[in-house]
Amino acid sequence: MAINALQLFAEARNTYGFTGTLADVQAALAAVDSTVLEQAERARYRIEIWDEVSPLAGQPPEYWRQRGDWPEGGKVYLIYVDDNLRIVQPHDPEQAGFVPMDEAAALARAQTYVSHLVEQAVDEKVKEQVLINLLTQ
Image (cartoon, rainbow, N blue to C red):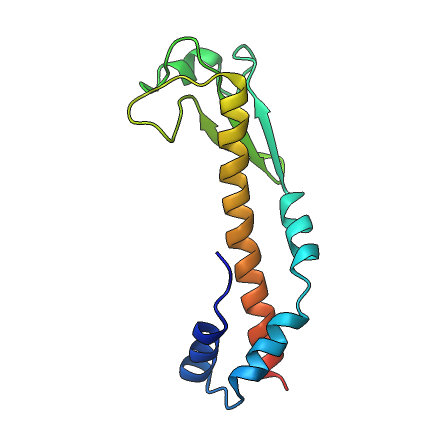
């Protein structure tokens, strides 16, 4: 999701009383180096395939298998944010039901999800930087 300059202009004007122009918003957006923000945000994430024998979050493997959504024979991906376990995904989130994933599918689904989270976070940071820039001129 890219940031829409017109929506940001409307928010700056209607919420914060910004009196500049749409061109000012577009220039402020262009001035933000989103690549640096994206690299920093992406560095916060780590994806792993669980070995299914190590404890997770202090719980034994049996605890996780008893969740009720654990298909036999599939791989489980883990997503860590700032080295804290945030996601334990035992089935394919893109299919109905509890469909197992092979390792390639698990890694692809995890990467897609992380990319989505990174994009959302970067958009919010860009928006914040632009609004601060516009409102402190």
